[in-house]
Length: 162
Image (tube, rainbow, N blue to C red; front, side, top):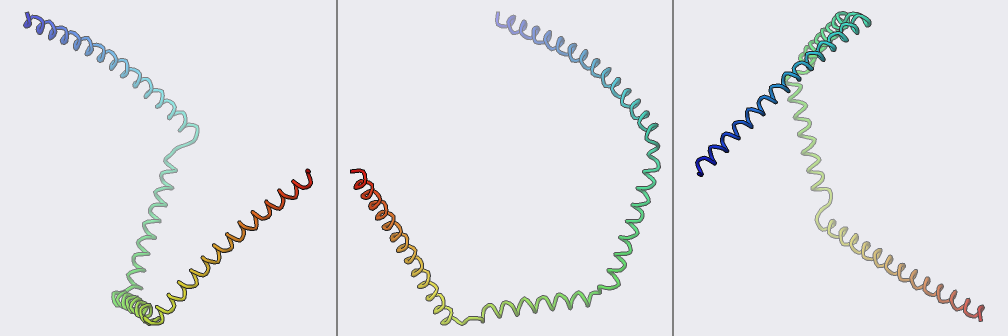
């Protein structure tokens, strides 16, 4: 009995696959026809547009001429570069750049000796502490004055209202 159920299921699956393939084949034929019609219409439009606007051949010739000119310019630039920049010039430029970087590093290291740098950093730290304390005191003073102002205003309104 299980064999017949499996056999029946296989048969139903095969039938479903045949139906799906028939449907796909029909859809493919329809799609092929639509693509052919659209391609024919596009070709007609291109022929009409080219007839109205003129020939693209002139445009291609202009572009080809400009590309040739660009290639010529690039070749001339390469030749000029080879003439004016030699290997010895390049090595001299690299040497000067390296010397400059070395001198900058030495100046950065030697510009402030350690004791003076520590004194400077300590002074900056003290200044930062003083300024932060100043801002804290100013904030507290402002809050106190604001509270005093509110209390005075409330007291004045209470005496006026009575």
